Amino acid sequence: MITRSKLVEQLREYQIRSQHKWGALTAFSSKPQITTRRDAALALTCAVVFVLLIVSCYAALYFRYFKVSAVFVCLGILLPTCLKISRHRWVARKRERRMLLPLSM
Image (cartoon, rainbow, N blue to C red; front, side):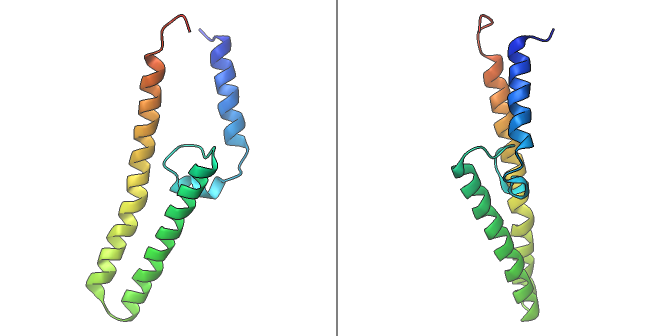
């Protein structure tokens, strides 16, 4: 059964998603939506680190340091993977917290 509170929550989430302020940075965020400046700063930092890893990988390949380049590639793969895992854990924790609320709320 759809209640008014569920509709309000869905509308709020839709409005947050439809703002598209930080659309490109959501891939580097540890949360599904970027709502605060702290989230945006963290996502921007992760994006800069990712770009630095890619540039370092190309530089290592240019100077023929193949093992160092392989390490940079592994770190470049590991960074978005860890962010995605933390995003899923955050959503699961939020869902679990929502289920623990008393029914009167």
